[in-house]
Length: 463
Image (tube, rainbow, N blue to C red; front, side, top):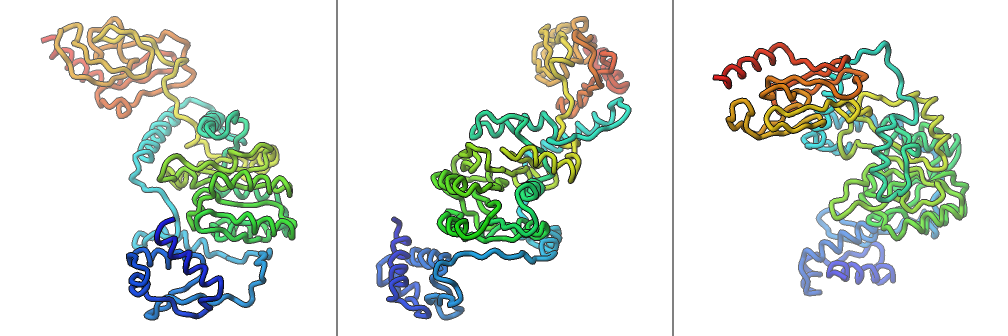
């Protein structure tokens, strides 16, 4: 046990044994440091720990005092269900977060300078250009449970702690907030009681308010999260329909439930047949070691509905969320359909690129190598001139066995005709002078400006 923890324990015992009574002053930081022969920082940390436990309180220009205990609290401190009445407070908080002159303390958003975010939007821009060039008669909805390829990738992401999870076990949502809403709609009706961790995200409380539910606040530890003892007492007394918890880095406390406590939570839930809505939107933000295991990792009977999104790890504007509803998949999937019909496909559908079914098998003009990949790198001398050329990335589909240099090459398709046009962006190739377009007939053409520059460079090499 650390020095500040020993100091806090000494004071805690004196307070609980009534040696220090409510309202009694505590020694000043300097006095206690000299009395116990410890550093002042240790005393400060001990006082902060006792303040978090609501045993002491600071008073301006007076020091620390033992905190009076409210006489109105019952001895067992059993929570009471109640209606939520917050109104439009959250809208004011979100609106203030958009003000550039204010520090955005009311909303947790990723840094816009994140490299992953910039890469995502570059790929999204490429997808938008390619989607605009598609020759199709009409658009269509991406019906629930959502785009299959995205669900397949999410299933792969969850494989380390959810073996056997497949794309058919996931529902795509418009952010984690919609996932939580769908879970509450599935499990509860107006007037029902939902247990929530206290304190919790204000958006959760507003969702409960909008659905006409009652919130039963379960106290949480500032480090370890939900108090399982208090939850047990509440379940014995009240007909709770669901538990909504944020066990991995709770918002706003940052508390993280130990992995050892999660099987105990599931055992308690099984005893009362209690569904658990797990908000895991902050689960990827661990700064030490690997991410904590979600409660869903210990779920064996499908009672945990895990909700997550990219809003805290990539960008809040993307609005890609998902849900692992377990045994409640059919109900959630139907409610998703009747409430929002579909999820936006513009950022969930993977951009069309060269693939084994649409790529061309071509010969590199410099090395003579045959490749079928979308992009190839070659640093060998030009076959026609023997001059060494700097290493450069260029479209493999823009070279051919019959050409002496990649800039002057053309290609022929060796596989089935692509089902739709696919463009190889010059920006993606890291070379502004080489670009090719695969047409619906399978032929490859170059823009006129590129063709002219190819001819000019070919003449210079020939000389």
